[in-house]
Amino acid sequence: METTKTKEIVINTEPFVVNFGPAHPSTHGVFRMRMTLDGEVIMDMEPVFGYLHRGLEKLAEERTYTSCIPLTDRLDYLAPMSNNLAYCLAVEKLAGIAVPERAEYIRVIIAELQRIASHLCAVGFFLNDCGAFMTPVLYMLRERERILDLFDMVCGQRLTYNYMRVGGVSQDIPEEFIPALKKFLKEMPGWLDEYERLLKDNEILLARAKGVGILPRDLAINIGASGPVLRASGVRWDIRRADPYSIYDRFEFDIPVGTAGDCYDRYRVRVEEMRQSLRILRQAIKDLPRGEVRSEVPHLIRPPIGEAYGHLEGPRGELGFYLVSDGSIAPYRFHVRAPTFINLTALADMMRGWKIADAILIFGSIDICMGEVDR
Amino acid sequence: MTLALSGKDIAGKIEKKFPGCVVESAAESLLVKGESLLEIAAYLKNTPGLDFDYLTAVSGVDYLDCFEVVYHLTSLKNNHSLVLKARCYDRANPVLPSVVGLWRTADFQEREIYDLLGISFEGHPNLKRIALWEGFEGHPLRKDFL
Image (cartoon, rainbow over all chains, first blue to last red):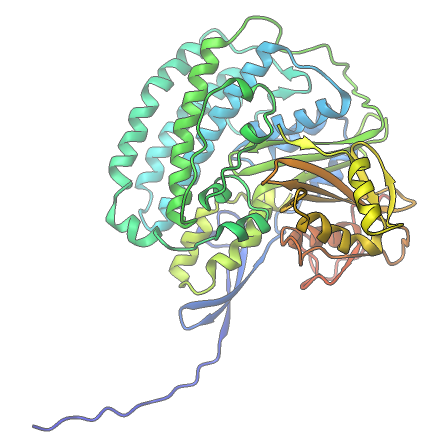
């Protein structure tokens, strides 16, 4: 028999640079990844952003403390209520303003609903990036819609709420809110189970996400990751528990953590967090007291000269506001510690060595919001 | 509850180790000399009992007579926090050492401060504009920018 001898061909290939974005359906906004590729494998990646930079921090320096609240809506537009709250917490810390009991409960209810709404988007679009095109995300948007309806009831808005105020909330929740919320709380666990049946042990999802884009524990801490990204790497750190703000020390809930720190763990942590949020909501509506929803705060707040850093556990991680007051009606400095901006630091480390198809998945799994990154 | 460590207590510890490096200490914060920032930061990170393994936020403020950079440090291990500050007075060419080697969190945040306030961080691996484009003139978050 004749054997054909294959000739070995040695091809020298140079690494080449590809600009992924800024306008690309999977970049969740206007974001560019400058990838150095070896064939299909990513050797290095540099994130380039700033396309949505609106000079928000500069704008805030010329507004009164109250009129900065709508600006915070425009940071992370998938979780504006959390942004409102974080900013109000910082101003209250700076000016030493107390919040009525009922307002604290309303804030917790709203913030946890916002966490569920945001995680629904995060998980839905992550699955979209996996290749489960549009079906899961539409189911999740259906549920998110229910939460938006609830927000519509309390403040008349569906995207930029401007609901929280320094010293409370802008208005009391309407009568029909609690029954609607109770109905939602009854139905939501069933929907979550439905997604789980569909996705948790889904072979394709496991193959695509398990072991992909690992962020080791030590690196996650060093890089300053927060929120589900940090917890998926096995760090049990949640500001609601570590440094309880508002009235979070009164509620029972668990902090779900991952073990491997891969894309699948980040997805799992988010789903589990939604269940924990439902637990907090159930406790909060049971104890909801009557009373004022806003303390007596002057129209023009003049905090004493000084500085304060207020932070909370937002859906995407630690959202903090560093405010400096010079005693006038506008903040002297308004700095946002944006969680996804800092989580992005780890993106290159997570992507190195994976293929382009995985890069989209890894990017989706850290759940960024460009409004917040660029500010 | 995260315990906010008193700047005064930490200042005593640092004074012992690095005499003359603390400029000012208050209950909430600790102001150190810019040139010794890096070694103090390394001390805070690596000393058992302090273990500031997590740099929460880096913010820059323009006080017109000086620039102040504020480091919010947290220890995830011991659940306590500290506010560390450093100033630079040279308005034409403000420089501070970069802490990226200790906490990589500082990477983008120092670039942001460089971009918007114009403070250079010595030792930063990739110090360039982040929010604005290359070629933009001036630093918008400075109080004299118009």
